[in-house]
Image 1 (cartoon, one colour):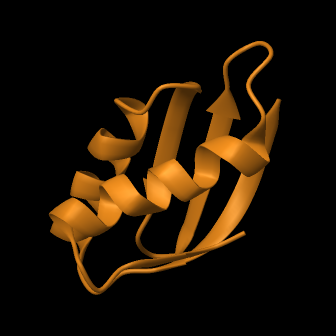
Image 2 (cartoon, rainbow, N blue to C red; image 1 turned 60 degrees about the vertical axis):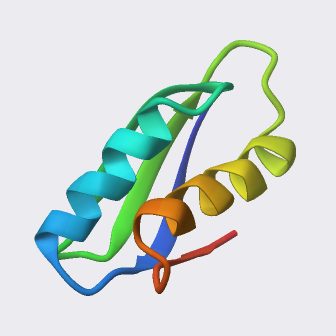
Length: 72
């Protein structure tokens, strides 16, 4: 399952950090962060619950970029 989320991030480098962190999160098969459109597309692993995974993604992203936001 793929879902797209609106994000708020200040720079392209920060967006790359968010993408790398999201890809390393359990339950995420792949993620792409687009700085220009301020969107994150996440493909979840089979059986993963997006409502359970996304709070973990946000927590992990805030560890590398504390002022980022993901709206889900």
